[in-house]
Length: 345
Image (cartoon, rainbow, N blue to C red):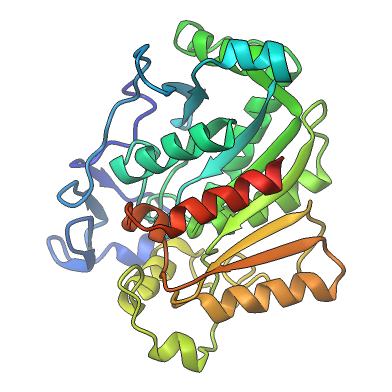
């Protein structure tokens, strides 16, 4: 599915949304070694030295089947669907499964549902929470600055809504046919949840607000699972300034916001610092004790509580940012998945 994949190892021109990068040809403006290099002539180079892409698999001997589908052929937005096996038997006994729409992390600049670390985590998550998961491949900055990621991820909600309403996509019909049938056959669209980690947690917050204002029926969004959300601000707390978190360094934070925020915006922009939370579904907020963003996540929790939102938070001990994908052997992953399972069920 060439039109749907976020392909590494390619050079792409930066769009008109990033003219401040268009300086001297060949000079490097920003670099996150092993992942991305942004040049002053406007080119962006992406690498897969550190994380490889893996294909989906629908083999009969696997506990969870996965398949890629196109959400919007015009923008290249796509998703990887995950379906637990023995689902037809489960549906007959216990009814259809919840559907979770998941947004990956990566500072809005990196990441993909096809990344091996995300694919492995979502496989495990789908298996253990017994849910169909739609893992969204949205467009990345700096080629596509915010709010493009929000728009793309809301389009994924709309695509799922269309499946719930029984509307068959005309574009890429053959490619999507199995994915659509998975959703219609096995999903309980009255039990839909939005979820994401890091930048994906930020996205889950923003698209949940948008969905609350829109008519997404017959889809019923029951909750938002926000994991280590990537928020920021112009001010820096003592914890944030002094904490060393191998999962998210200050350099990476600075580069992510520089490349992803709208031109001219600072870190008090609503995309980075959601000072006034709007209407949201019930929220499960998952915080890592050693995360550089811990205090900012706790401030978000308190802000939601102050305005009367239904929000629960859980702090996972002795782990840092994005441990669920960066530390696949961590025993805290089991705790995280159980917490999500209990929230959904």
